[in-house]
Length: 259
Image (cartoon, rainbow, N blue to C red):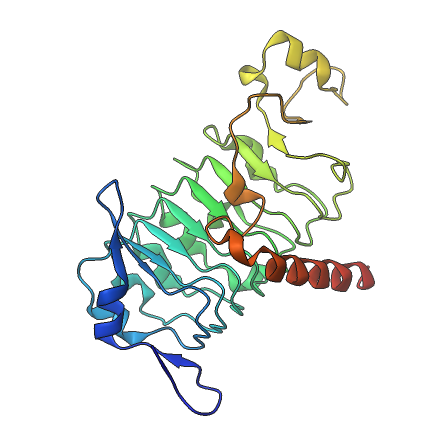
């Protein structure tokens, strides 16, 4: 990869991008351009026809191209730890996406497009470590979503539509100023629908209304399946955890000073 003078960051050529594609054991082809000082989304990526997954995490990208939807073969997209303030509407055209990580950016609620709801194959959506205050029901795909990361944001209440997502198994809302749920000491956060609880779990959960248990937050039980991608944005880059922790602490301190 070549460095350009000034503040333009690293420039990635088409040839270099092709060489960086690796075949995974499951047969999918991933292009990894993580932690390279990239400031502008590499336009050469649009010329690649043999790419299923794209990792541009831990760079300094401030804006995604408006035609990001012209990568229809993408199934997995990791953009965590960049400087994104918004996401273009065309991302809704990436209908084959099953995984989308936008954590540790500068996203606000107004910067998220309603076209996210078009990603009906999405099973994991990570929006943690941003500046989100709310989410509209029209922003989140509901048909297949199983994991939702909302940690380290500015939510004062859990989005109402969350309990209506029938396939949603895990929600991480740690370190938000939630008024109704105290989760600071929890290791993991689970949103459980009543019909999915065993008798013992229902006894553990409290029913504030005394009549119906719509949802609850419980500790991880021993042997529970791990969802590391919803806890740390660097789930695919453990070697750089120290950098992530510094960013997380700075973000949280900034949030505390604002309330």
